[in-house]
Picture 1: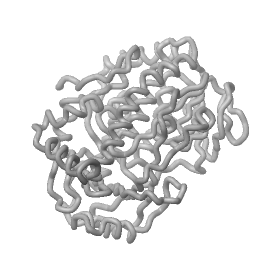
Picture 2 (picture 1 turned 30 degrees about the vertical axis):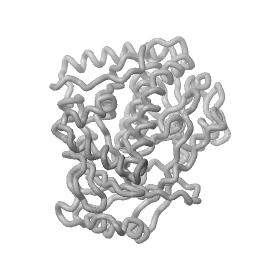
Picture 3 (picture 1 turned 135 degrees about the vertical axis):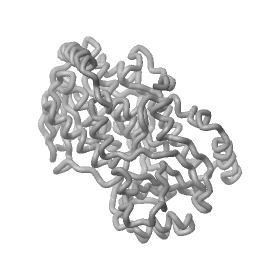
Picture 4 (picture 1 turned 180 degrees about the vertical axis):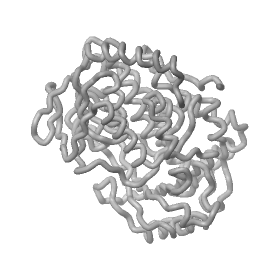
Length: 429
């Protein structure tokens, strides 16, 4: 969204004021992890005058080919950071949110997204390639002075800074944004380790040109079935089809959370599903497997001047498409808490935790419940799940969207910092 001249002047003044506040609390911040959440936090803090260094254990920046769904609540933050134009250039706007029977292909629920989200919630709903968003965030961060150090293994923290490759890197603030296997979280909460959920996700992309035209609808589609589900949607302006296929796999023994999978095995696992999905999977050349892990709710997210963000403190199963959005919101609220004049970083981190925990716990719970819904589990061999979908499918568009008001209507850039209650939908423009 283009900013008018007078708005630019007002925004510049606000940045200067907030930067002055930030300098009272922290001058230097170290972040463990250069993922979506870590880079969003780095960009947000650097824009407020903080010197930021991000430590990433990988030898080079990069992301495995997979898609992300950026709902309006995430887009509000990215727009506030000046990234909407860049995101729009690489994104795809889905027409509908659609739930289909995985075998018959019959529509069970259809809700408008492209025409409704900006009107109702004040921001669009977009699909992006994870690597594209990662590049946008990394480039924007570097432009405002963020240092990104690769091949840097964070093993823990002290009051003086993060432990990186065996050496303390000094900072006033440490942020653990290093994912579900976070070394920072492991030190802070050694008895709250990740736990396997009994579910395995296959992820990948297929060039749209390799598929029959119109095979995959231009929607955010969930195909539901007994013991599994499949998600399909477009990326990069419609040039790529992204898929996520989740199966229940209680005997999974591989400790890796990501490894390259066998496309033939993917085909076999979903051999009884709709012909459109079989055609899609037959075109898959490369796929990755993610073992889906969860974590018990942490009692707190900070220890002195060290705080946690994203999957490091609240891993969210991908059944609400809110994992990346929650990390993006975290980065925004954390930065606002640090720039509102708190007496020190520790106090700001405690306030950030107070604001974020109720919302992220709510989303984690809804995502877990969706696993049973999408896999047609629960009472009466899935009959209750089917009944819920039938009721949802019978509602008018606006009423059908209403359960998402507290999610999509939330605006981390302006929500009151004195309370953690989510806001409702924005007024129509």
